[in-house]
Length: 316
Image (cartoon, rainbow, N blue to C red; front, side, top):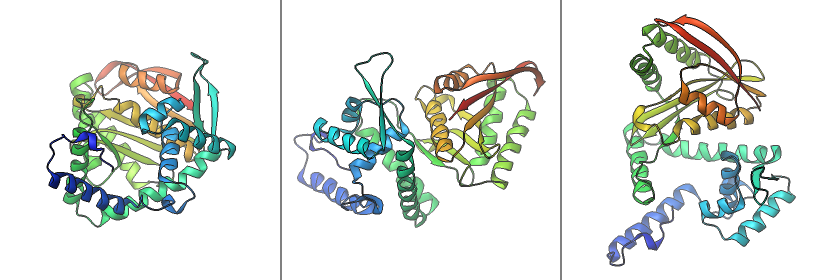
């Protein structure tokens, strides 16, 4: 994690500068960015970072990549041309402004990136497994603090997405029960339904095609979503939740996008979800992500007599 000198006050003591430089050297050794090629691949760290951004953000332009990653325009242009000649990326003219060229990964590009992302996750996982649960929580909180301090353009604390771990399922059930009772008056039978869903997820988990994401902010869980297998070609998005204290930060949108990317990489052809008409914020996210309403049905459940269930679908 390189820290630009401009972030330090002009009068910063020399020992502070040296401490940060020492930490930079230590951390680069930990993540292996001093290797010529990253993750035993033919790609540099910057190239993998560009591929990652294109895989996890929709409708990126070269200008936005330059700004977000702090890259030289000419350097990035040469890199993108190389990617295109190798069939890793494709371009399209933006419908709303034909002067903008949108970048995205091809199927080949996603196939090339997938093992790199897996290797990166495996390396980080191996590092974390040497630490206790308390140590892991401390290091993640410290990283969030560093990011927050060095990102003065936003007053909101950053968040991270991670895979589930022991204790998370109980939190998912409890918060669904509490929040849906408080906000929509769904009684304890709704909480029982959530408990059934998470129990089936854990008991039948296919780790190659199913996943739970937990959003964490300041060391606390603030969101969740599940992607589970409905059939060989269809996945189901379930239990999207964002805590009231963390709403407005884009967490719900990010959780749904992660499900879409994961489902596509896992080989699914479609994602289905079941929700209620009155969940306006969630419905807005689904619609903006490309889901379409395919069915609706009135029903009486969880102590309510006026519910309308909706089924939404997204072709991948």
